[in-house]
Each structure stands twice: as structure tokens, then as C-alpha cells.
Length: 417
Image 1: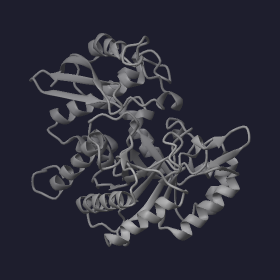
Image 2: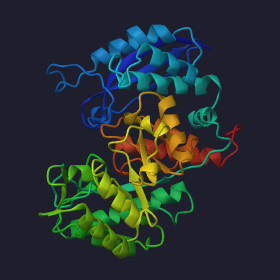
Image 3: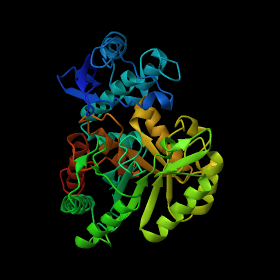
Image 4: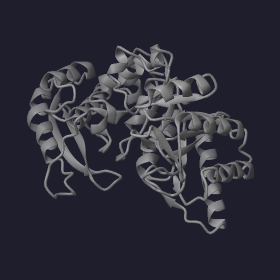
């Protein structure tokens, strides 16, 4: 079965700005589509996201990307069997620049993900099965979710320095129970805030946004929520510090409330937090530019908790030099917005896993309702997924897909399992 048509479509992401969708039709009329995040941080990761200039949708229009998809990628794909590695190689030939500056990484990634869905349809497989086949995995497993429950950081300026705090369900029997218990704690935490007369807005990452008197107050409230729901033995905590946003490269210090802290002082704070709270994972605990501080953090906590990183590291570079070798992390956050094809994504996962790093498949800023992230986490047996808070449609699409996959794997409906 071959590809007969390729279309591009401009849709709207969770931030209210345009995102790109690739749509494919096969010879028998089978239709698939895949959309990609419009992550404003992606350009900082080294990839070029093609968008229009001018005032259209705040200068974020994607008609050039649609044109490239239909006029350059389309003719190269039509008449070919949908095979991810083969067509990803064609994409690399069409745009050989590392940053995908000719076509745009959003163009190549959308096309690549659509090919994966088309290949799954032709082979009469679920998408996660096709991913597992591409990855050479004989079996698959569901990840446990890192459920975002509260948000802060420099952008929100709410008195809480960390970008996100997540619930990690190490005591849940299965994914469904993990999600249900996470929702219970989420609503209890929100109820505690309301009881104190505080606002309970939802941040873009799906966590609860409120104001706090000091950096420790939300942790105390979260521990109270866990106690009230009798979930102390179900959840441990994960923190996305996004410390690069707190880092002053001139003074080599970090903003902590109203004070400036050195890396060593911040490490002391992290150690105290590990003693006070059930901390399992710390993401981007120090700025990626602060290699010396990162080494010190790894020496202090690398044998105790998961130290995850993504910012400042090109995942293609991981193929030749691992994060673990730099002694700054023992886990890698892998996002679709940081690669330009599915092949690159799978290579990143394989590279990290071969180095003994934990892999966390994560959503991006500017997500759409695309749910393939769930299939990627399952198909690569990555073990962990950050799909945002269980409170917004773009994140719930991923959670609901995982619920479906869990039901599928536990039933007789999946003949290939």
C-alpha cells in the first residue's frame, strides 16, 4: 500500500498559536494525520521551526511550512510505501542541514509521525506496536506518569521558584490506578488552596497556579493533601526546577525567593528537601551552562535520586557523547520538539538507554491534542512519561490514549501483543 496524497494543515495549539498538522491518504483511502508542538523553546535547542513573519497570529503563521509539506515533501513521498526509516532518510536528503533550516523541523517531524501512523495502518498494527518494531523491542511496557500538580517558576512569578512539581506513582498497581489516585490528590490540593481563600488557576503546563509565601509552603500543602487522601505510600515527588531560568550567568548565582544562591548553596537546599520530602526526581536542578555546579549536584545526589536533564543538550550529540559520561545526570528528558524525525527520536532513546540513563518521554510547550507521545513511551518501554497535568485537553489526550493501550494490552483484542 502506497501513499497517494500528502496535505499540510495549520491548526491551533494549546497556547492559541498555529501548529502544523500533516495529513496522508493511502491508495485504499486510509487517512492518517499527525500534528507537532509549536514549542517556542525549540529554536533554543538548535532546531529551526519554520513560521511566517508579519502580524498574522502574532507572527506565528505556518503557511510556509504548509507549502513545504505539500510542495516539497509531498511529491517525494507520493507513490512510496510508508516506511519510517526509509522516508526519514528521504527527509534528510531533502534538508541536509542539522537544524532543518530549509524545510523546518516542524515540517519534517510532522511528516515523519504521519508516516509512522500510515505504516501502522498498512501493517494492521497499533502505533505503539510499530514503534516497538522499529526499535527492535520484543515486548512493551506502560510508563508510570509524572503528573504535574502545581506550577511556578520565573514566568508565573508566584513566589514559587520551581517550574513544576509532579506526583510520581511508585505505589500504584497499574496506570489507571496511578491516574485516578493522581486526580484525587490534585483535587484535594486544589481544595486546600480554596479553603485558604487562594486562587487556583491552571497553568499552561496543567498544574495548579497559586501564590505562596515561601518556596516550601506548596510542599507542605501537598504533603497535607497526600495525608488527607491516604496516598502517602502511593506517591513520591518530582521537581522540574528549570534552573536555567533562575541562573544569572554573570554572577553565577541562582534566584531563590528574594535571595541569590550559589550552586553549592542551592545543592544544600536540595539535600534538605530530600530529607524533608519524598523526593524521587529532580529535573534541571542547575542551569545547563553550570557544568561545575552540575558535577557537584551529581556527586551530592546522583546516587540517591533521579537527576534528569534536557536543556542545553542536543540529543543527536548523545549518540557520540552521553550525558552520563559528563557526570551531571542519570536520566534524560526526551521531547519531540527537540528532534526533527521519528528516527532521531528513537535513536535518542536507544542512545540514552544504552548508556544506562533513565528515559522520560515528555510533552512540550505549545502542545496539540496529538496523542502519539503515549505510543512512543509504550513502544520504546521508556518507563516514564511527563504528559502534563491531568487538567487540560492536550494532556488528557495522552493520558486517555495510555488508558486505552493498557486496556488493549490486558485484553485479547491485541493479537500482536
